[in-house]
Image (cartoon, rainbow, N blue to C red; front, side):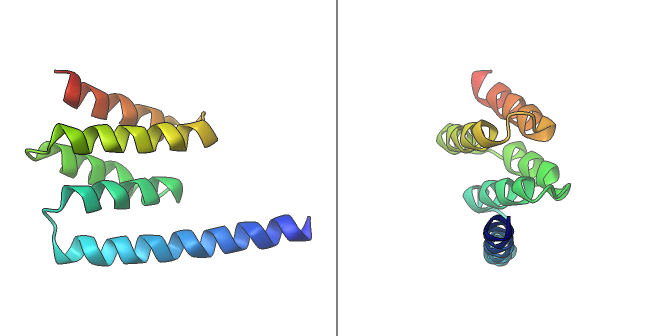
Length: 101
């Protein structure tokens, strides 16, 4: 149990660092859709409500379909680990509708 707690603490610290790095990159270039989608996924992983608005912002632009498909594949991986994550499932559907229309 102690080992599991240590792994969880380490994973949480790495996620926080990844969010910080992605946030800094995003703030340097708010038009970078790939960075916005990456940051959104990290924030989704951290149960941060800002994830939804980041996804919305990224897909509201004239985004390349390849980037949307990349984000969908990332969400597929996320949902494989967290299959009951409602916002993750909702976001995947929204992204899919962007490329299927």
